[in-house]
Length: 429
Image 1 (cartoon, rainbow, N blue to C red):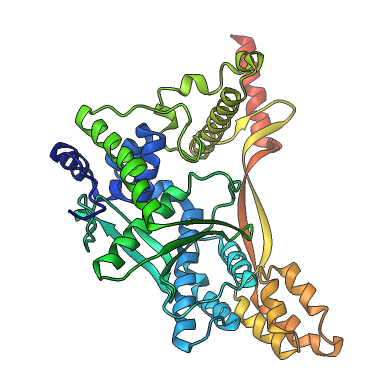
Image 2: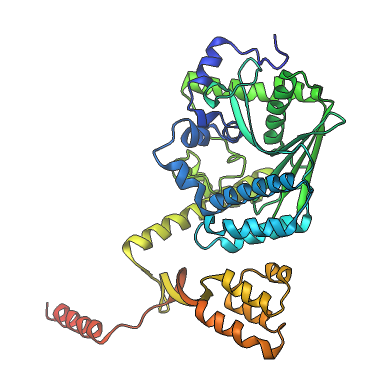
């Protein structure tokens, strides 16, 4: 019997394997342990189109960034070098078109932060490595045969038989060092990788994992032995799978008061959550009771409720128009124009030709019009003409819609006249 066999009953295996393949991703299994209600709605029985909707532009931008790290790493391996900043930036330039609308600068900013940290690409590294494990603890190649599957951003087994796992995080939130909930993901990855190596008779002495939070430049490290990993697999992970199986068998998916692995904020099922009536109520009682944990949870609920209400309000305004407020204000969308550079690559080449260091350009490559003028200040005044001319050609006006509170538009003469007529009719009646 393989050492990583979960030793589940046939009923438990049948229950879990009856779930959609996406419900057996490591992300889904992680969420299931925090809130079965969300797991069921988001992965086990999702409405059509929900997963694509819930990812949103930031999530898609994270995908573009992960594609960039893999492409950059493979290019370094091809060249036989451990780092090549200029190649990394060139690859990013070619991938700018893949970033969702309005998020190119966010993508470029993550690229620069990554390159500033300059993580070396070691020989033997593998990128975007899929790992899949069957219920009996064996490796497999098809996600539908796995009880859990995922993709490791970077994987390497060194000469000392230490398994290195690197997971790039594009979240804006970096958890405290002692907060270990995200390590469920890394441990699951490590199990899949360890089983794969063992199946090829390759010995592994230890596992070193790193969660690299790109936006903050902060890393979270975790080390464990194969024995510790095996114990975790047979205890915490097995309990998680047994809990999912019980939910499937009983068709009961309880909502958890802790609100999910990332809090309720962003949960697409908040509006139908059994706890929604409690989300914005009971604050005073909690404050009087003084229980810090309960108060913190209540705050999470309230913040999540507010976030969900804002999304609903934006949808309402988008469909029905602005909402009138007091003091001559309206809640709605206001259009504003801003000048941007349509083809920054052309301006970059003009700046380089005029003597600006390319690395300096990339440091500021939002290349809004304002940033471009800052760079022009570095050029000899006698050589600025061609760059200014190129900027003039590439500058376009981009219209943005900004949601929020704005001054109410002044009524037109026709609207005023219509209002006076309405008042006269009302008086006569």
